[in-house]
Amino acid sequence: MIKGFKEFILRGNVIDLAVAVVIGAAFTAVVNAIVASIITPLIAIFWKADENGVPGIEVPDIYGGTVTFPIGG
Image (cartoon, rainbow, N blue to C red):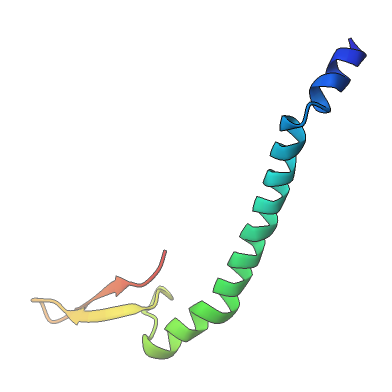
């Protein structure tokens, strides 16, 4: 039984998939760090955050208040 499992693991597809998952996780961490440290502060320069801390474009509504169209997620 162990011999069959070892052959399955060493077949190649499982190892390729494991490497792809590790690379994908590392790439996700890099992209999240870039967005949090560079992109988000640049957006905050041009658009102020509302009372909830969400940056976006403020548009006056028909009742005299403002509506914020959020930028990003």
